[in-house]
Length: 301
Image (cartoon, rainbow, N blue to C red):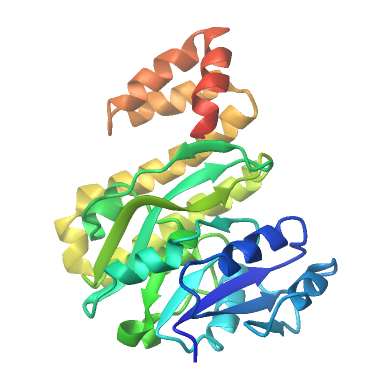
């Protein structure tokens, strides 16, 4: 049995799939297996997977599943000590698994790292920052876990790893926040171990509304499930719900070039954090807002 199971879920993923799989085969730690879940692809996904060794175990769903259901389907086949995740358009740094196993101990349930965000062509956009001491309140204040960078210690919490199948966009957020709420130990590595690809047209008004709704559902459920945390961190809960709602809408407006509408949203958010006031000022200024967005904000939103 391999030391690390790597869960990959794919649907019509042939464009970047080979680069993603190659980044696993390039790992300096080689005691791993890939559990590849083909979510009823109709392109050349299976042909690409078949070109690799027996270290990839291929399974196909009977019907196309939403994200939470697809991940749970794959979890049934992950029986190693550790669990990692890699989406089919992202890339791992060669030392990703080795670096994480080095800091994993008997009391740590989850290790994650910073990532480098890249565009559809592989161009670097930015490097994320992670909390040095991740905890439930720190994640409420600023959620900084990128799923592609996560490694979970299944020896400690195998039966606690399950995704909410009612969530289409953030089942990972739900799982990790619930684990953090139980005060289980998380560790972070402030070195980018993943190149995380974003696609320029991925956010629409409809998907943004769904994301806002699901994040609110997760946070409201956490408050009901852990009332003592709700009481202790009520302000953080409230701010987190507000930020998720407005930042996703601001991101959509910026993508559409509606800088004035985005500026109004950031002005509202300045009540939570003054940095949003500075952003709103730049976005209110005609012509300058376009330049500032293209040079700076486009890398972050």
